[in-house]
Length: 216
Ligand code: ZN
Image 1 (cartoon, helix red, strand yellow):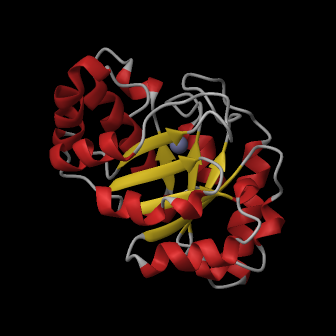
Image 2: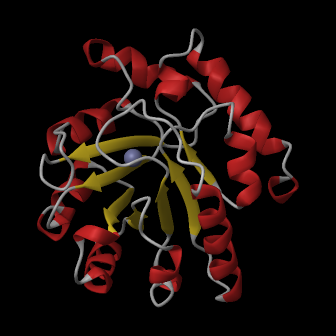
C-alpha cells in the first residue's frame, strides 16, 4: 500500500478489494529501524475498515514486541517483524501467535537465510527483503534469488509449512524468476499502484504464478 495515492486511499483499497490480490500489504516504518517514517496503528485500523482482504502488516520498527497487541487490535492478520530488530525472536514470534495472527519474520538483503534454521517451523511466513527496507520504488537486488532457493530447501528439509514472501522491486519483469526460485507470495507496490491499470497488473502477476507448476 506504500505506493498508493494516500489522498484516495478508499478508492485504492477498493481497487485491491475488486482485484485478484490475496492480501493487502502495509509497511510500517518508525524512522529508527529504517530511515523513513510511514504510518502506524491508526492507518492500519482505517485500512481494516475498508479492506475485504487480509491485512499483511510488515513492521520495520525497533522493539516490535511493544506494539504487537496494538497492531493485532487494529486488524492485522499477518504480523511480520524483522530478524534484525529482535534479539529474542522466538519470544516475539510466540507473542504474535498468541494474539491469533500469523507470524512473519523479515530478513534484510544481507541477512543469510540459514539464520532462520532453528525457528523456521514456528514461523508462518518469511519475508525476504529484495531491497534495503525504507522506501518504495527501489530496484530488485538479484542475489535474492539464490537466497529464496536456500530458504525453500530449508523449509523442505524441515518439512515446514512456512510461506516465502518476497518484498521490494517486484514486478512483471522478475516475478517468474522469483516464483520459480521458490517464493509463494509476491509483494507488489509501485508495479501495481503506478500501473495504468492496477487491476490488470495484478491479474498479470497472478497469471505468471498460475503458469508455474508448483501452484497448478
Ligand atoms: Zn513490506
